[in-house]
Length: 128
Image 1 (cartoon, rainbow, N blue to C red):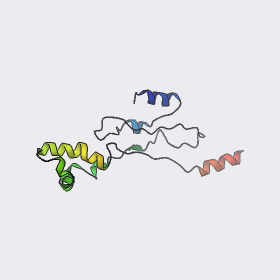
Image 2: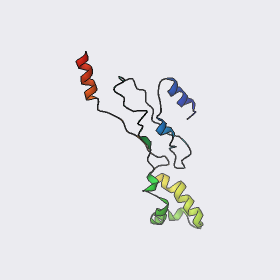
Image 3: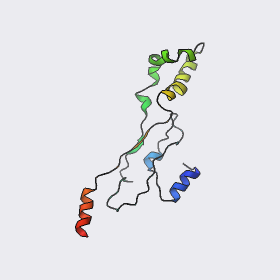
Image 4: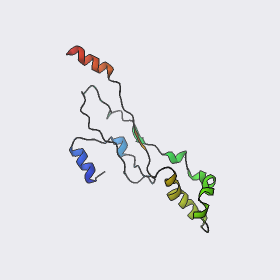
């Protein structure tokens, strides 16, 4: 969040929604590797993302795919990597290594955007 790249984005008018800043994007939930930034130059009545009604965050796929309880289901796919390992080492390998190569070691970010400005656009044309 305090990286030079982020500072440069913010200096040039980009903003990252607070709802994104609140959700680290690594599997460990400690780092902000990924961001969604906006540089909005639309009419004030055509706001793509509302600061007041923010709907954004990360999608933690590990609650439904490759969860800790799924270890036994997938163990057969990495048996050669865990020969002679303790249960704790096997769990660590599954949680920290194997599943990151199956899906990702980053959580996908999402943001809800308003995209229909038909009424505002038409009202603006009538006024002109």
